[in-house]
Image (cartoon, rainbow, N blue to C red; front, side):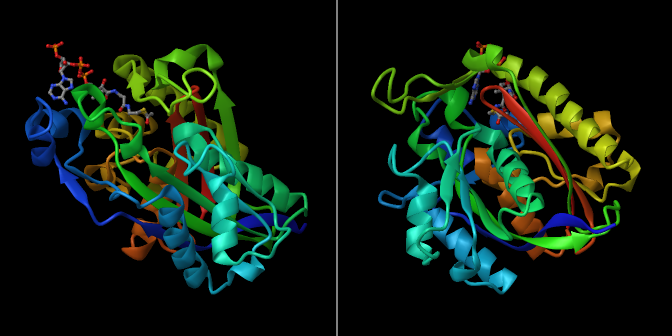
Length: 326
Ligand code: ACO
């Protein structure tokens, strides 16, 4: 029986040229490379220069993804941008990027706010729209300028985050409904609003009329993240009737090496199959998964036909999983 799948046909990423190393941070706050790298696995992160906007990074990643997909902006039926750091409160980054790219006027475009789970949420929405036949192609971008909402005097948080963008172009494709199909094989998303105060910003438009700075209960986030990401992985594997042993790559949201390693260990995925970019990107929230995907494809690690298991967890709490045969 024919079955519509959502296939990734091109990816791209962009990182600002300015790099902040742990040593650079040690000149700004009371910290050191040893503390940061052992606790988080982060050694450096990219940050935007003054005047470089979220939409600029998104546009750069999108152009590369379109080129790799051999498509033009005119071919796109939907633009979704996962971000918590838009240029303006409104309109959306997606609308701005669509306009600058030359997407046909009338094409829907929206931002999706699910923090670090934003890319997984976006792919889930897009996969559903493609399978319903509402659209055939979409541009899905994860992008963040977290350096703008980090308190650079707070060593508890400023060492953790970075800026960047990743993008994918997806297209409807007829599959067989089998796990050997290429494309999105399963998705699952969740939220638990009782954890609203565990991770987020301490301000916002309606509460403080500012964007606020990132705050979190690090230990609570750590414990919850490992369980939530494993739950999401189990759900998508069981939906697709696939065992963890068949997975070629575990590509988790890049928050912290200890969270990533714990998820890998619990799922019994060997270290060499776990994609890690947090060492040179830091935590880029909604951008981290498409950034890591694009970098891994470009490096020849993830190849056509590879089975990629993608869990994410972030503020809300939100979490979820994607199972994709690339
Ligand atoms: N440099 C040096 N010392 C530091 C720093 C720093 N950058 N930050 C905190 N410390 C100090 C603290 O002040 C504390 O000192 P004290 O004992 O004198 O009070 C000490 O280090 C220990 O602090 P803890 O918070 O207990 O450190 P912990 O081992 O829990 O590590 C961390 C903190 C890395 C944030 C950890 O809780 C963690 O991994 N949490 C997961 C959360 C995460 O990664 N969030 C990212 C965003 S969420 C997401 O994307 C899912």
